[in-house]
Image (tube, rainbow, N blue to C red; front, side, top):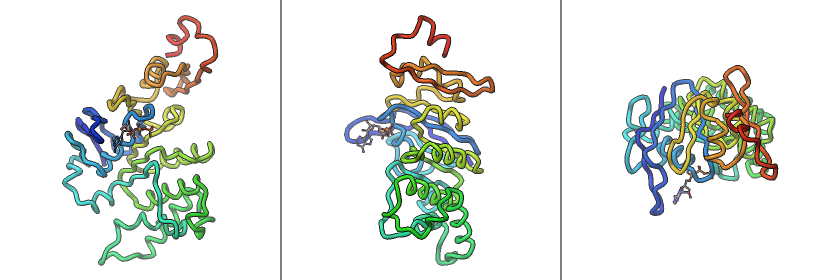
Length: 267
Ligand SMILES: Nc1ncnc2c1ncn2[C@@H]1O[C@H](COP(=O)(O)OP(=O)(O)OP(=O)(O)O)[C@@H](O)[C@H]1O
């Protein structure tokens, strides 16, 4: 199952926000969308999910224009976990996850034992089985975030779109969640802020700046010290790990300027 964007342009509030964005996510791939605040990551995710329509360009789901598909069909095939996702307060954790089954239910396919099993598995995947009976408003931000992921997994989509999925999570749960997402047999697009997490888990990353894709490719190719400096304004050293991967070490802004050649050597 593939998802691709072709020359997407989108404006809102009189401002042009995305300018001719094209990218494709390959079946089974985890594609990270990275970029500074306001660069257009959330806007792009909402167009990929079909929540918003571009003023020009189109999104194709396995070759079919997304806007030509019924909303319910899209919901069966694409799950989106939004950055500021909220859920009605008087429901339990389990009920929040059960909502993921909605696109699969109908007059001829009522709730069944199979749906219970899928919900149980999703709760277990995010280690929330023990809190399944708790009311939503009593849960912490991180617990709620894990339930949003569980709801998306229960939806059993072909494509999973995650907008900053590690928000509110401690480092253990951040790594755990990205590992969980990575090992699903799913095509995933995830907007991420942590460049090291992107480098660790993404097959490819798309770096956005001011509504455009600045670079796209394997993390070790896209994440150079020069790009991190020009796009994020941060001095960093990119350390190659010898297996094709990399990690990023940031430099404190108060430290003296690096020696000549330091960035070049690290990029
Ligand atoms: N509905 C809207 N009306 C006006 N401006 C908007 C609207 N939605 C987004 N924008 C603007 O578009 C730009 C891109 O926003 P977007 O949320 O896509 O960025 P982002 O990369 O996800 O940012 P962040 O990392 O802060 O979440 C921002 O300048 C934002 O203020």
